[in-house]
Amino acid sequence: MTENGKPDTPAAQSPEDYKHALDRKRYKVEIITALLLFLYVTIAAFQWREMRKSTENTIATLGEIQKQTTLMRQQLVGTVSAVVVINDFPGIESTQTDNYGFNIGFRNDGHVVASKVDVALLLQREIVDGAKPIGEPWHCEFNLPPILPTKVGEHQCFLKGLDKRSWQPIGKFKQTIAVDGSFSYWNGFEVATNEPICLRYVPSGLKSIFGSEGPGRFVTCDRYPGWIEYLKARMAGNGEIQPPK
Figure 1: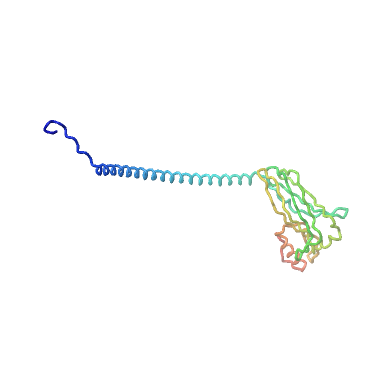
Figure 2: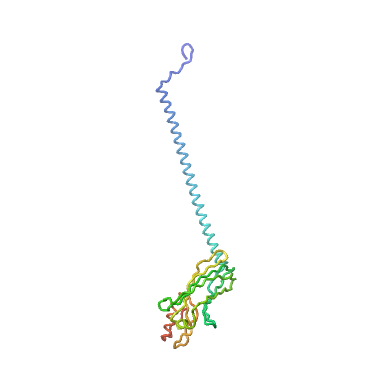
């Protein structure tokens, strides 16, 4: 208060002081803004890390579920589906008309009906030593009707041009009939494709000092070299060698 009772009036603020005060306020606002921005970025980074971790865990869980589902499906297909195999060992049939046919059967060892059985075969005469092809090949492609469990579907491929005369070197095991191909079928769940077929004919009635030799049927390609070795040894008088298993 002044001596006359009037209130004191604040001194007028200079422009420089006003500018300094404004700068201080602006500085404080910038500091607070930077702190809030840092806090926001920190929280966002934490949330992103947690979301990424959760996503990775979800993906891993889904991958494990998919693996288990695939395994369960494979087990189900393996225990319940149709399973088609070649029925024992196919053979050659000579009819009264002096023509030869290749007989092959497919057996269903599964638990449901096998359908859409498609077979594609290529048959060719070959020299036993060296597997050199002889003559023209025979193409045999066919479809079988549905095969019930434990039942067999059969087919005969006619070997045009094969007669008693051309059969003689096969019967003496100088030549063989090679069968190569594949088959597919619907097993009740999916198409079982490209099941391989590889067979070679080994005759019977080969003469040795021990009697008659040979199985007189087709054998699988993995056993064929063993039969060649066995029969050559038997023809040479080896009585100790055992036939292929």
